[in-house]
Amino acid sequence: MEENIPLKPGERIDDLQRNGRRIIQDPARFCFGMDAVLLSDFAEIKKKETVVDLGTGNGILPILLEAKTAGSKFIGLEIQPDSADLARRSVTMNGTEDKISIITGDMKEAADLLGKNCYNVVVSNPPYMVEDHGIKNPEDAKAIARHELKMSLKDLLHQTRLLLKPNGRCYFVHRPFRLAEILTGMVREGLEPKRMQLVYPYVDAQPNMVLIEGRKGGNSRMIVEKPMIIYEKKDVYTEEVKQIYGF
Image (cartoon, rainbow, N blue to C red; front, side):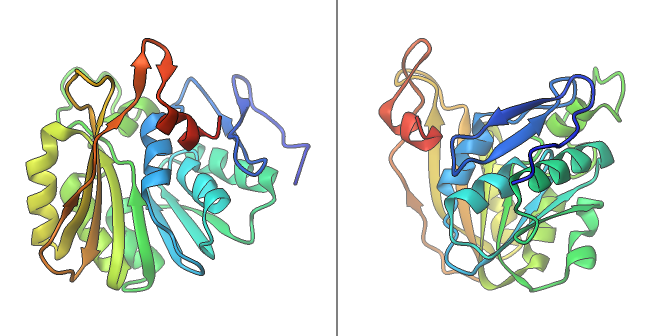
């Protein structure tokens, strides 16, 4: 593991509580959230499988999945050069260059860049918001991470289909208010929804996240898993969430 990774002004190193893995983050750009952590637990990566993360940001999903699963190769595709640089330096810091590759490129061209029908799994924690009103700088890293400025849901699903091998799987985290659009889009692209879990901040609250698994060319049958509750009470995680975080 490389110890002398130079940090740029404002950057910090966070411990991921998984196999000694760490990550470089820049709060001025965009730090990973709980949605990425939950997706890394929801995704099922088998031994020797290859994985692509579309819109990898600072590389949190490939880093967590490499630490937690038996997959053989993880590729993170990121359109923002500065975010891709963060991810690459984290990969080097963890000494995982042999298993994780970070590619700078447009997610709308993912299959042309990475190859068609080549991968077992595609994961993504994509931008949730369609609206772009109120955005002062459309090239701002946080705006790109939150709004569909560089990749739409339609783009994501289409590129996922192109990347996956037959019977390959995809795993997404998104917002429930777009669930109908997500499911119909997946079916349209031949990514049959197979498993879904709603995530609730509290037991008596509305869900604020949804985790979805799809299979390329799968049959029509979906399992809805029991709800996940994040907090027992204010600032106190449930036991399930503590286990996911490795506390």
